[in-house]
Length: 306
Image (tube, rainbow, N blue to C red; front, side):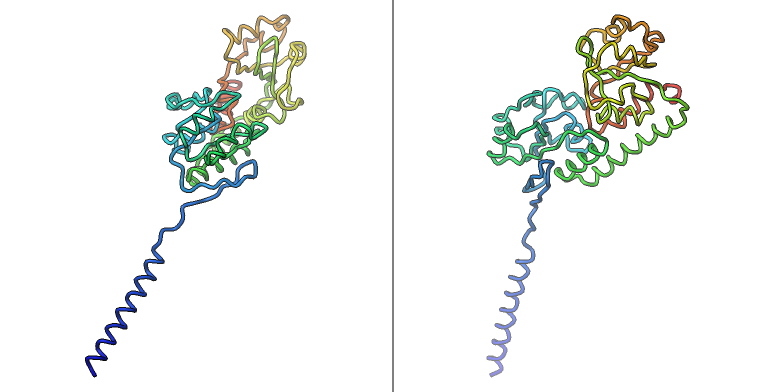
């Protein structure tokens, strides 16, 4: 009788142990690494895991990816990606108008960081091939840039670094605005992004205007909206004290401005206050916006930074 009870007890313990083991095994099953992020189209983009390979279809987003510390994961960029220097070694799969969808599909990246181009026709083949495409709307303000950084940081699993990056940029801009706050008067400045004969400038609602504002610079065309064509006569009439140009595709941008008919009557030309500033820094809505504000302020108000 005792032997029977002992055997029964042993069997009970064995079965209980099996149940505990099964229960333990059920609990120890790995959790899903899948996550979903909403892009600027309002589309939910689902990623099975943190991306190990990335294609970037806009230079500003490439800069953000590198500053987030994931530049080594970027396997495809555009022909205009010039910064940082490491970007020069990455395969070119896009120009200003088209993307090489076939090559991107061959690369089979874990995610493509794209930008809004008016329609989804070019990225549709990528999504049809099962490649996650996260679309960013091109930033028009500093707040837009901060949002882009945070979005991309979430996509690549670098949320903490994204927050740090935004704080660093804000601190750099604040440092400049504190310096220019001491100015009694702001210098009247003309900002040129395209030379004669088809002259273009930037006004309110443009990314460049926000840079100029933060740098304590008074844009003579701040009353205009966005990017616009401007006449030589209107520039002469505004009589700017300083001229800034981002033009880098003519032989002598400053000399070209000086040589325009009647421009010798402009204060900036008389006082040799025409300066060429880095086009990429001044036009890319990315992590160097703090540098852009500092560059503009140092160029127009060098005495504040001695």
